[in-house]
Length: 166
Image (tube, rainbow, N blue to C red; front, side):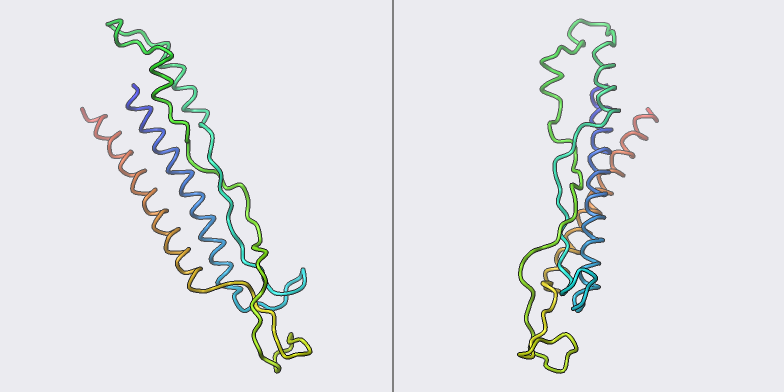
């Protein structure tokens, strides 16, 4: 039963990872789309968005399953889990949570373009604090991490399906 619990944990963790990476991809897409936006509703150039992540908590399903494992009766005394083995098996890290999206407060890039409608008296335009190369690396990294989480989820699903065939 503990092996099945591990499979559900893997799916749970992968799902939170997929959610987090999707949020990163969306923020990166916004950054790329607004790399030349010099005027926003708040005033000034667009500010780069960054996704803040924090460690997740255990899912309600996993906690309920853990309680039921302790109540199961086994044919041998050695098969019954005690609190010590349950604590050793529990993973303190249960995925990731998107804590929020914040704006990068680094200063804007100043570009000399006196013909631009948003240029200052010296001919400089305050451009967004976005580096396209950095954003593309961020997008590729988030995409690869998302794909890795999909692979883990599919592998877990295939293991469960194989176990049902036995």
